Length: 250
Image: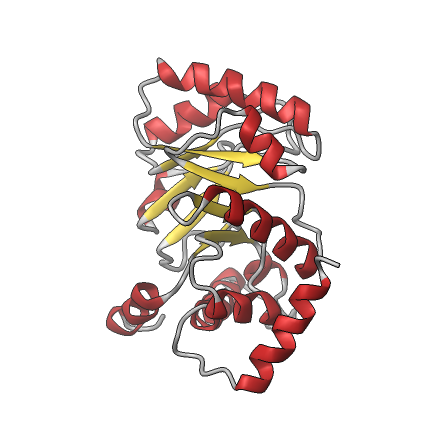
């Protein structure tokens, strides 16, 4: 893996925190990881600096208590409370119940509140929390235009002091350029594609996962650099992306 001093340059300069939400057998060190309770382990906790326990919204057997218990046990920095995927009203109810549970729970880290569309209305119904983090859910399979429209609207309403996370948002070229153009647009994203989008040309035998993990590490470093000022955009690229982004609001 890249020597720590050079990885640290990218980590320190990146405009966002880039969370790996996939299993690599704990073979690489990456500063940011996100996992649901059923996959979270002390080994993965030790393989990162900031650990988020995810609510796993597609698994309705995972409860807010499960998330908080796991986050407390593994000393995670953040626990993501439950949402109900693509259902705003049910998500608000679930998050309010989760906040009640968190008030008396031993976990004392930060809470991540996944919002559903319409995001500003969802935020309002939660009481416009200023502590902790809020996230944009329901757009894991959304287009870059949809994601930008959602985060622009939410950022405009909450201001720059509220942490916004994009659930399942890979740093595409277009999204990365928008992040470089507007460093306060987004604070963090998570994605699993560095482990999913690997070639299958590794020879059969043991320790194939080690090759996959190193390739994932390369993709993570490349994507982190894309979200830093180390990339020098041409005025033409920025104008083209700006025009494309404006089209999302028309």
